[in-house]
Length: 254
Ligand SMILES: Nc1ncnc2c1ncn2[C@@H]1O[C@H](COP(=O)(O)OP(=O)(O)OP(=O)(O)O)[C@@H](O)[C@H]1O
Image 1 (tube, rainbow, N blue to C red):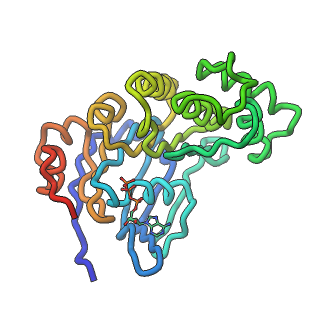
Image 2 (cartoon, rainbow, N blue to C red; image 1 turned 90 degrees about the vertical axis):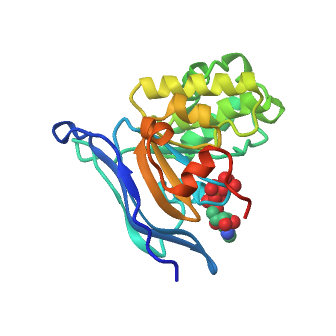
């Protein structure tokens, strides 16, 4: 039995201007067979936040993103979704670490995603075109998605997510296998989405990227949330010991 961990929580928000709650996890545990990937994680996501999930390999970042997106069942705890002023639920879309491209054109990959989400087929083509234009891929729209470069495929995946008109975008290591220029292009798009007011939840191993794109950092250690702090605090303030070693690149291999 792992002892409970008291997380360091230092996220500044003024009580008077508390943005709307979009997703909340309370004591969330996720198990894969005998392996516990998340231990009692509690977390609130509010509108317009830009949260980076950081931690060593296997610390539970992807699992936490999936739990926030409702893709993995919770063995314990609960997930609660907030609602907008009109009573409708906040829309979420997720881009996976290695997005799966079907053997179809880029346009059809985006259109099919919309259709699967319940958009009438007659609207899907125009919305797919708009989304591919948004990510600068209109010229590639009719090319088979699988022949596009890694960076372009990642932009198709972002278009597929953005086309759903999400309020919350969840990105699992969005630039993990991209070259520096493709990385910059994808980061620039994420920055634009953020400027548009989207909530962005992102796992990343790239600390420069975390500095550029996040305003809050959640640090995970073996499935425990051990720090939930403003980005400035993460890089310049006091942190639990393992997080400090991680930042210095001195965390021993396990
Ligand atoms: N589907 C699964 N079945 C079994 N174990 C899993 C599964 N998904 C994740 N795990 C385990 O849960 C733990 C957390 O994995 P997760 O992928 O969430 O970590 P991560 O921090 O995203 O890792 P990385 O940085 O390497 O991508 C790991 O020990 C992993 O092996």
